[in-house]
Length: 456
Image (cartoon, rainbow, N blue to C red):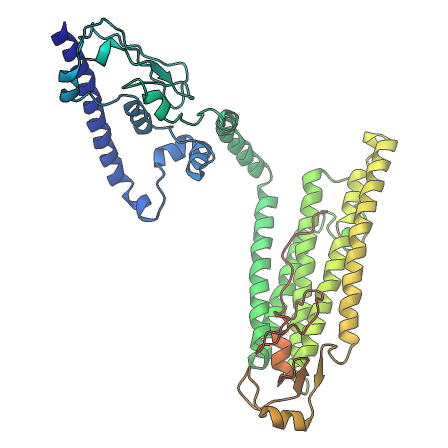
């Protein structure tokens, strides 16, 4: 009986060792395949990312517990099998008792899978005094074999494995509907292919135009009028071509704050708003190019005044763009097919929300207008010749002789052009970092334009 029992136990541990060697071999093969991902600190299997992208990302971020692959499941099963008792402990034990040992194996995903192994009648060498180690179930449903009477008191209970079960089920549901959602998106793009392509083209041109205008503004005295004229003509030609192509689609009515002639469908209304919003910004960019040519050719190159004018134009544009979608949505909501009371209620609520947001844009516009009318900056003053001589007559920003020196509150002196450009981005002194400029509206003196679409 002893020989049979020991043989069975050796078979169990031999199987566990072979499974561990096979799992290590498979992990070694996977390591060679994932060497590139580990090189960059990302260890995600490509097959798991294709079959279950959301679950894989949640497991990688730590929200869900890993265990979706076969290698992790094998490792968890190996942890449930304890190593064989030492030969010294076997020789010192006495007494023979017939006992049964039950091993319940639970994987990471399945909680109802269990395997029971009944060992052969063990000899007296298995436990001292004929005592059988009790079975200590874990918190996650997996039971481990205790090696002694006091082993269950020292072994910590593992954390629960199914506390995020709802998140995992939701992730799997998203993965199931994701292919169908992509198919619906492809059908939607095919049905509105022309409008979709035009919207993408307009957005790309708008982003590129903004970069071009910012670069020309940063050149200051080095920019060439011929290049600015070419850019202005290109902007206006693009705007006229778009409106000529869609001359019969009620695009011109909202530009003068009039509703379209007919009630537009939802996607057509959205298309009208997107096109008008982008084209208005393109016209404003052309006007900014004209301002750049004006201040380049003016005497003194007053770039502080140029920055204030660019900021004023941008805030007027923001105010006008906030009112631009109102006629389209007014016509869309005022649909008698929904009932007179319901359509009137929805239209009134929309106009109320729109009026509230437009008041904020009006306040910003008048703040920019007051800054333009102010001839001097409130937080600085012009320095006298004695103050300039005491400071050294050298600007710390441009490292040249001071031109129109400005005295800050902290008694540091800089060129007016240099410190004005500095205060476009900062509110502190360039040298001592003392707070000089109070909190004010955002400056658009670099020639930039807001790229967010005003849809509602």
